[in-house]
Length: 185
Image (cartoon, rainbow, N blue to C red; front, side, top):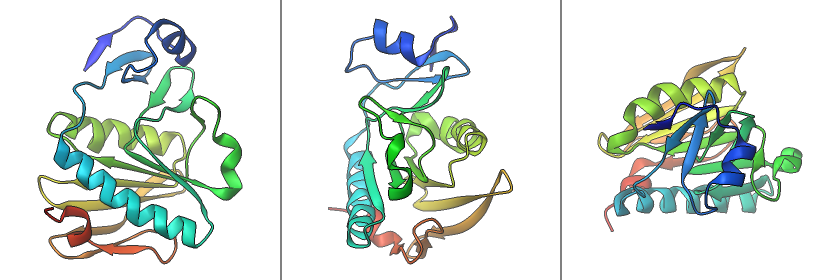
């Protein structure tokens, strides 16, 4: 939810808001990210983090980070994705306080209150800022959509529902069954 239509920048946000604040910026508008994600959301993020991180570490591809982490695209454009993969050849974008640029892959786990934001706004933003691969993980529908950037536009690369397999283009060879992502603990 937009909480301020004043012009906000990342620098202003860091200067004026408490460090533990959960806000994003879109077109210089301040967006409140509270309340915190629910346990189901966190369990799904955790499972997917473990799967991706193991693959990335095993293959020495870079690093996977999880929320909350600021991804600073431009002065008025900051998001806090659930998961990000930074390829080793782009390690320089990992700054002291934020990721300064576009990670190779971003994952958003869709919450009840974030459907339009994740499916439309964030997809447009990640496409515009050149994120090579965007995963939409939708627990309510048990669906995962994987978009890959081609010629500046996202195209659906992989999709899975129920017990299907989902694959990555950026992480060649990575695949997982949806049971591993949506399993009940």
